[in-house]
Structures are given as structure tokens and as C-alpha cells.
Amino acid sequence: MGALHKGHIGLILKAKSENDVVVVSIFVNPAQFNNQEDFNNYPNTLESDVLKLKESGCDMVFVPSVEDMYPSGVRLLDFDISNYDSVMEGKFRPGHFNGMITVVDLFFSAITPTKAYFGEKDFQQLLIIKELAKNRYPSMEIIPCATDRDDNGLALSSRNMRLNSDDYQIAIQIPKVLGLGKQLKQQNAPNETAELLRIELNKVNGLRLEYLEILDDRNLLKLSDWKSGCSRVFVAAFVGSVRLIDNMAL
Image (cartoon, rainbow, N blue to C red; front, top):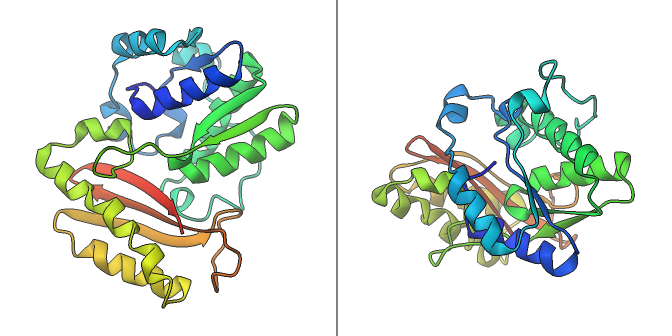
């Protein structure tokens, strides 16, 4: 959705190393915002974004208008995501994934990529896109890419541009607390570990926790123990008016 940062560029460089042609879409999709203020405040840095794309070796950029994407108005794709839509982002941002998967399907149909690259920071989104590809584009390969972080561990995000210096110091506590999960799991069950991490984040002044869950990263189901080896901690929190998400494998 624009406001490109090092994490986006990492996706492009990886795609460039594995393909002959790399296409990047930039489109702030109104259908996936359930908060109009969030949509209105989303940063628009198209000129600098295009420059970064050129420097990274991107071959083509697709920058459609809302009218290009939705000439007859928004018509959401009829695709069942019920198994993912009741937890975390699906629960707290109703309608978000319906809008997201609608526009991704339009991009896949228009561009017909052989491979598509998505970051693990939006892990729930990544799982839904994998389901979309499996059902509607079986010849396409979805490539997950590890989350890029800054020197203090904060997951790179376009929303970070809205953090002032004080907010940033609060935000960097998120990855620090998540990093405790591997230590806490040695002596605690998944639900106990999650509660201990919530307690730690709730101690951070200026941070408002929305959710913190430890789930199976194959299907986002609750874990009763650590036997699967597929556990991941997920979090969403507000720092001021900026909503941040992150996740880490445990």
C-alpha cells in the first residue's frame, strides 16, 4: 500500500533474485479499512516509492486508481475465510480480510504471477492468501519472507512513520516482550506463557494492548501444549493512535 521501507525492498530483492521480471503493485485499498480515520491517515509517498523501486531493480509498478480496481463499486470476493476470520485481526478488524482478499485476487488475476512474495509480519494475512492461491491459482507459488526489523527489533511497518520519538521508545518494548516467550515456555504451558506476556506488555506506560495470543502457526488454533513445534506469539497494540502488529515464532 505504498510508504515503502526496507522490508518491502527486501521482498523485491528476493523476488528479483528468483525471477526474470518483478512487478510491484501500489494501491491503498479502501475495502480493507474498517476505520475511516486510519484510511485517511495512511501515508502517501508515491514519488519516493517509485524511486526506491527503480533503485531496487523492480521492472514494473502497477498503480491503479480506486475506479480502475472497482469500476462498478466494491464487490467483495465470495471466498470462505471463516476459519481465520474469528481470531485476532479478523475479530478486531471486521471486514478487513474480505477487502484484502478481494484486491489480492484482482491483482493475481490481472498480473498472473508465477510467484508472489508476502512478509510474515502480516502472518494471518499470509495464511489466507495461501488458501486463496491453493483454491483459485494452484500453479502460483506463495513465498513467505521473514519480518525485517530495525536495530531495536521493531518490525518495519509503514505505520512506524507516524511514531514520534517518545512513541518509538514505547513501541520497541513490543519485540522485547515477545522475545521473552521462548524463555517463559520452558516452564509454562502456552496459555500461561501468553498471560505472562500480556502482563509484561500491560506494564508498559503508553501502550494499550489489543490482543496477545499464542497459536499454532499452521492453522491459528489454540495450543494445549508445545508438542507441535509450530507455536507463534501474535500481538496487536496501540501506541498513541498508531496500531502496531507483530509476531514471533516460539
